[in-house]
Image (cartoon, rainbow, N blue to C red; front, side):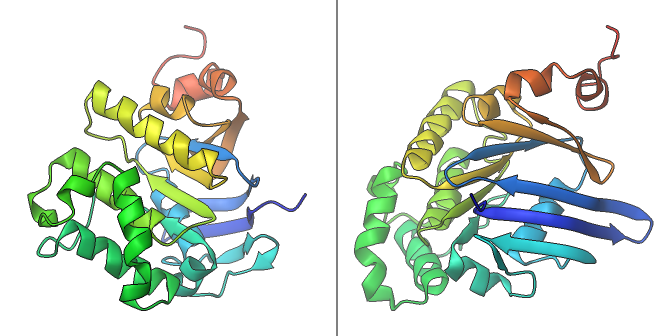
Length: 242
């Protein structure tokens, strides 16, 4: 079966810093893939390459078998790729609902009035319906993260890219977010989630890949990857023989 998303021999460097050195990675339809790695490993840059914000030096990005490497971000979005950002970036002077309408209308190429109903549904799903008329700049961190996720969902994505959405949350808030992401997966949306909170990631992901030194150094079931000696040494700071 053709993967919903595939990276083929992706190369990217910034000067002497190698971000990707021939990365190959597949995402199956309906799969949740977690990505972990040390700070500076290039995880967010990899998302930029998938979403179109960053151009690879070499390689291909394929969406359901179609080469989209040369497409700009807005065209990739309208084909079904949506992402959230590690630091929420709402339009702070606009209401929560207005933030969603702007994202949905632009991301789906529709008139604003045509996305009102779907945006209201997304707000309810993300626990923001009672805050629809509140200015986005007044939200708590959890609600800003919910809004960031809601804006990505508003474009009805096939592939959802999540960049450290659990960072800075309490254990209870993190559990609530995990439940929401599980419900999104249940709708058939394929997910790639970058996260440092490994237990949250493991609760959702079918598979985890570890990025280090421009390469995927391990991938597989979450428990197997976490126990991998090289992962323990490089990512978790534990000697392999400990």
